[in-house]
Length: 112
Image 1: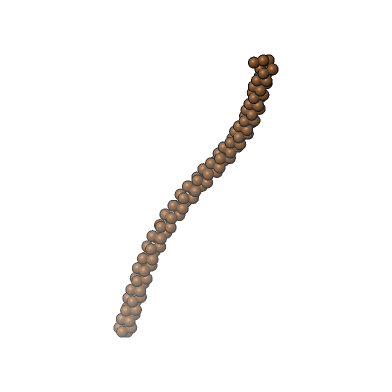
Image 2: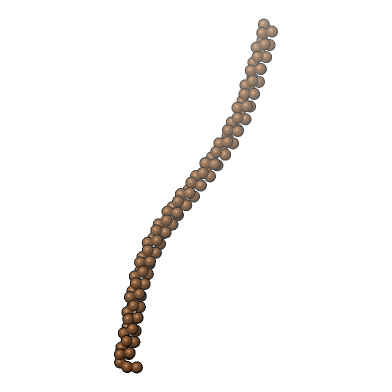
């Protein structure tokens, strides 16, 4: 091999190394851009996760309040049922008392 052929091989080799360095620089730049975008996406996901956690906590609080309301409604329904029973009993006793008074008045009017 003569000097010109060696020079051509070295030049081709250096050209390949240069292209490789340029391609690697492009790849590194792309990787940096992708890494930055992934970081931004990660931050957004963290923010979404925090909002989800907050929403989940609010839903838990609402569930607790709804359970309390349901318990109170059940207690109210039981109290209404008791009140209706008491009203029915009171109505029956008032009617009995009315009948006793009527009987008494009828008995008095016969005795007079």
